[in-house]
Length: 346
Image (tube, rainbow, N blue to C red; front, side, top):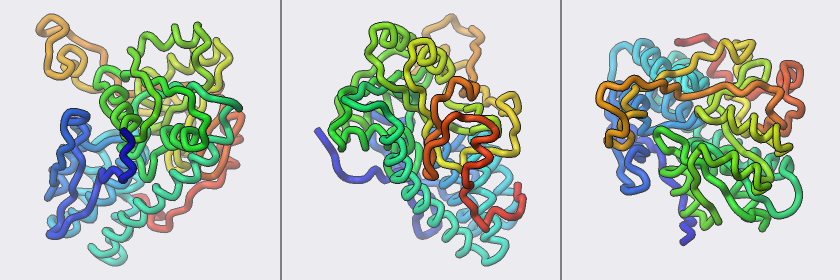
């Protein structure tokens, strides 16, 4: 059944607090949690109650606005917020923007900076959807996506999933393939939940089954998001993205990255400079709290991997389609300018 109402993922409350849809409880429960301090919000960010690069930027900005009303040392709280997850560049950008506004105009300025960022992300989502639809092959489309890139991860309809939704509304979506996205199942739990709400034709598959889809000729394009894009076009995204890019290249299928220009980090020259967050072993050995490995087993659990630019067919942002993806082409991409980010901040 299609649900046309918006997903209320994050909102500001008075008395000061930040309300979040707890994404760790989806799809079983739609539960909201309330963060009354910056440290409570940091805890929610770290346990992935709120996630997705653009949405983390909004959360970080609201966190500074919250600290401005509840703490004596706002810059220290901002530093803790920015450091909560190291890979997604948007988190630190949102924090810096709200902190700069607070330094100029106090708590009201920080809150308005957060609200402005939320509006801008929603507007960027609509533009990414239009550009992304133009970047796709013609005809009915069978699209494959990884992790979660909808309203649960960004403003508006999201990033890559916003393109899927645009294809659906244009009558061009034949089927959406959704990787489970192990070990935390953001695809099965979150993207499938959003696809169900939107009435999309979809199937969930194990990450390891994607290769068989390509081999059978059942994928027309891959659409993924990004948590950080290095200056050379290397893309850090949820672990499992890089193998999809390799498969897509081998089978001649377009591999398209959809993310706002704020995700491009000119201060990181190459993918080798992207810090990859390592998550607890228990997420692998005890998914959903159920043991699937011997007690005490070690696990390799990077949250992200890096896809080199030569495997990216196109980078779609709110500014248009960048193709091919390289240091030069990204340098020519107009950057979103936020006056609030002129100081360096944390």
